[in-house]
Length: 110
Image 1 (cartoon, rainbow, N blue to C red):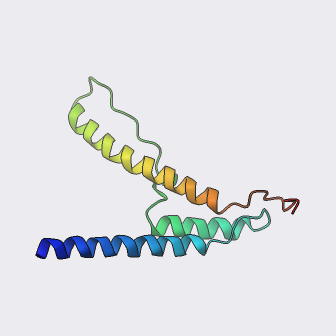
Image 2: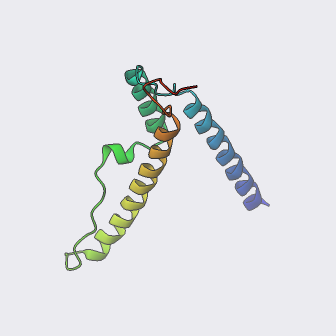
C-alpha cells in the first residue's frame, strides 16, 4: 500500500511538473524580431528554472579514450553527462522553436 501511495504521489508530481513547465513556456513572449532582449531573458529564466540550460552552460561531453587510465569510471561519468547534455539540448531546442514566430520579420503575409 505504501509503495502504491509513493507511485501515486510521484505520478501527481510529474503531472504538476508538466503543467508548471507548460505554463512557464506559455509565459515566454514569442520572438518577433523586435523583442529579442526580453524574449532571451524570459527563455533563459524558464530553461534555468527547469535545469534545461545545461547544454548552454556546458560543452558537449567527449567520450574518453579507450586506453585511458580509469576508463570504466570515465566512461560511466561520460554516459551520465552525455545523457543529461543531450536531453537538455533537445528540450531547450524544442522550447526555442515553439517560442519563435514563423517569420520574425513580421511580414507573414496574413
